[in-house]
Amino acid sequence: MISRFYIGFISVVLVGMLFGFSSCDDMEDNYEQYLEEIIYSPRVTNLSAVNSFKTVTLSWDNPQSNIAQKIIIRYDEEEILYNEMVNTAIVKNLEVKGYEMSVYTLDADGNYSVPALIYVFPNGEE
Image 1 (cartoon, one colour):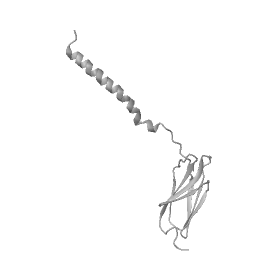
Image 2 (cartoon, rainbow, N blue to C red; image 1 turned 90 degrees about the vertical axis):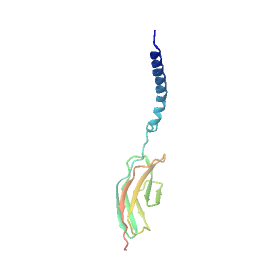
Image 3 (cartoon, rainbow, N blue to C red; image 1 turned 90 degrees about the horizontal axis):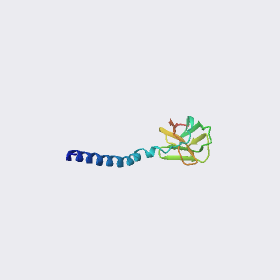
Image 4 (cartoon, helix red, strand yellow; image 1 turned 135 degrees about the vertical axis):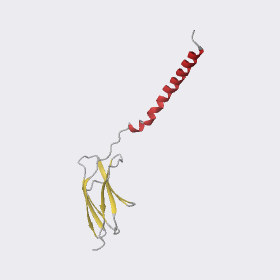
C-alpha cells in the first residue's frame, strides 16, 4: 500500500514537470531574434581627406562587389546621399571646427554598411 506521503510527493513532481515543460516553449522567444541572418552592405575602405578653405574633399575605395548601390556621408546633423557609387565627395560651406565624418554604403534592400570614419578640420584661411 502506498502511503499518502508518496502520493502527495508524486503529485507535486508531476505538476512541477507539467509546468516546467510548458514553459520551455517560451524559451525560444529569447533567441528567436538572433536566428535571422543580417547581411550588411560592404563598407568603403581607405577613406582619406584633404582640408581646404571651409571645404573637405573625401576620397575612398568602393567595395568590389555589386551589392552596394549608394553612398551616404554623415556629419553633425547633415546627410549627403549619392544615388550611385561615387568615390570622391567635396563637402563645402563648413565651419572652421572639427568634424567626424562617416561614409556608408547602402544596398538595394536599404541595409547600411559599417561606417568608415574620419576626423577632419577645415582650414579657416584661403
